[in-house]
Amino acid sequence: MHYSIIINPVAGGGRGNSTWSTVKAALDAAQLDYTPLFTRDEEGATYLTMRLADRHAGRPDETLIVIGGDGTLHQVVNGVLQSKNGRQHPLPIGYIPCGTGNDFARGYGISTNPLTALHQILDAETTEPVTIGHYHDAIKNEDGYFLNNLGIGFDAAVVSRTNASKSKRRLNRLHLGAFSYVSQALGVLYDQAPFTLMVQQERTRQLFPNAFIVIASNHPFIGGGRKVAPDRDLAEPNLELLVVERHNWLITFWTMWLFLRERLARSRFAHRFVGTHLHYTTTSLEFGQVDGEEMGNRFVDLELGTASYPFRQVRHLRKKKKVK
Image 1 (cartoon, rainbow, N blue to C red):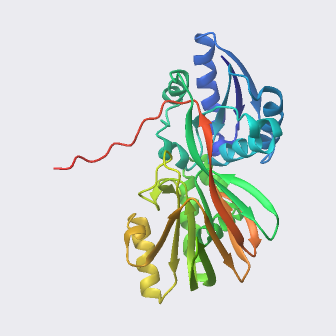
Image 2: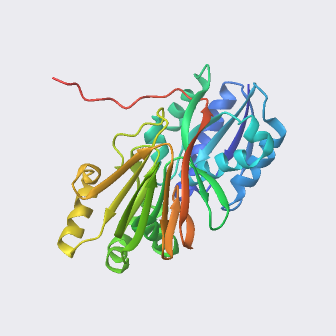
């Protein structure tokens, strides 16, 4: 087996470099065949992966290892699927998480210990198909894939404001990146106006005149481990769309508290749509985010579906509470 390894050295405020040093020592000790490739900018992983997919797609002895955060993994999967060869024969992926949130690792069951995550890859005898989300924006004629979430409204505005803040890099260096999101959320909560949202599923339509939180999820987690879709699992083919409307300030703060307590999805304020095909539109410009990557401020006309992607990694399923 040959391992092509894409490394984002600045992931997690520089944690990518130290993670790679640990992994490299283990690979050398095991005398494994590998080629390291380092990203140089935000779009570097996509470009590197497209080249790899064109060269190696379809080879049974090739595995692509990603060392980075959720954003790096997002870019790699989209890079493979933007390549013609990659779409026909996706390169199996193994993931070693070292980002700020690591939500996909939680959803899949990947250890945040680099050596344990590496052994999950090396111990895998076969590939495992994993559900990923696909979106098509009819207005921009844009297609893409997501592994975690696609959000518009509140969470996307928080992502945009956090990325523009001066405190993010400082907190990332201290490995406190999650606090940069919390610190921006209160400002977004005050500024973000509700918007009109139309959701269509099969032949039914539902109008939400005061939508505030709109998150499509592929697994339970968002924002560094908060459960926003507790019933989702990467082995199942469905996505879940959560819609929460804005009410008076008292209820708005209560919904935020429910979100922090991981109870929002099952509260009476949540509207949940589950399926393999979802369609929703807005009549106003709204912030969007996909796997924590900014989509910009845009009118939204999105069709969501699912696809399957092969991972070569032993999956550690989340432990379920015993029923007495």
